[in-house]
Image 1 (tube, rainbow, N blue to C red):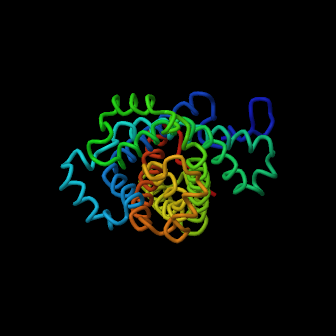
Image 2 (cartoon, helix red, strand yellow; image 1 turned 90 degrees about the horizontal axis):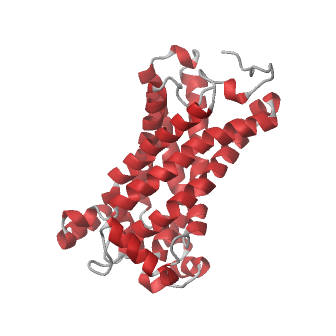
Image 3 (spheres, rainbow, N blue to C red; image 1 turned 120 degrees about the horizontal axis):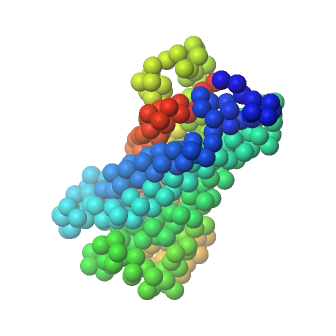
Length: 314
């Protein structure tokens, strides 16, 4: 396929197997909805345990014992708290994260031109993913705040049903700072996380196709390409979990009644960096590694089924 636009100029939108037109971006957005909505909602029990380990480490000491405590005290519904806002919030986030990444990546490559795009590929991955995540988090924030409140409120003190919880968040918005009170800590957690997620994914895919699978990418079966996608996504996820864990802890701690009205800096200094960086980290590495691997696999499987080709390469 020619890399030239119909005008005869080099254009990043013509680098793939199909032109990157509005239909391509719309399909990428739908792929992002599937990738993030399904995976985040599917691991709600791990998320409930992790949030409670961060907020109440004395009671929830580890993943297994934390889940056992939740099951004993609240039954099956206890470990699936926040499923609704998780599914909707991360579907919206995925739509903008993946869809706009493709848009921004093409835009920035075209701004830079062919030579600089090839020379500074990693900088374009970082800029494209950071730009996409800014918008993704605005969509996610109200639902993430609702999810954390549902998951970390002591049983019986806050509604667990999605509609009732949203109503309660609106009613108490002065104290909960709903709908965008957590946006800055969310950005501080998600933007580095997404930059790492996309940068390391693209980098690891590139290594696979230059060191391990050295024939042209298109010559390998879709199953091989999707295997590379999953492995690259999993490894990228492990790095992401470590990079973003301290900020993730702060987001969880903001939902704790004792921290109501406290600034992010106060919460961070009272908790201490070591605790922020390590409490619940093992669970998060397992959770985010698996999550990121499956997200990229679902996203690229959807893209491949639409004839759009898999992400990344040489």
